[in-house]
Image (tube, rainbow, N blue to C red; front, side):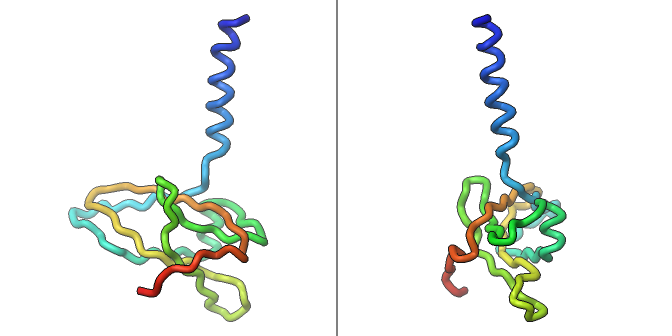
Amino acid sequence: MKKLMQILIPLGFCFFACAEQKPGIRLVNDSDLDRDKEPVILAKNALVGLIGAIPDDKIPVPVTAEGDTIPYQLDDLDGDDSWDEMFFLYSCQAGSKQKVYFVFTDRTQIPEFPSK
């Protein structure tokens, strides 16, 4: 029984950890050139298709694999007081594949970023 528990407990943690993964997208630079501060524009409906439903009272915040917030902006293109697309800049080395994750935060806690 003790051996069975030694096998099942780590296995249970694996299933729990796998279920807790953050939604994300993979950015691929398949060129031979480094890409510095390339614009990334994601329509809201496309983002929902990639990461799943966005709770009504939350907004998605892009973060690196290390958990650092990527400065971004949400744009309301049709003036209906609801964002329609997300914009951010991202740098990728030549031939690299990087994951950008999304965490959901309360609409009242949108971070402010310095103007560039």
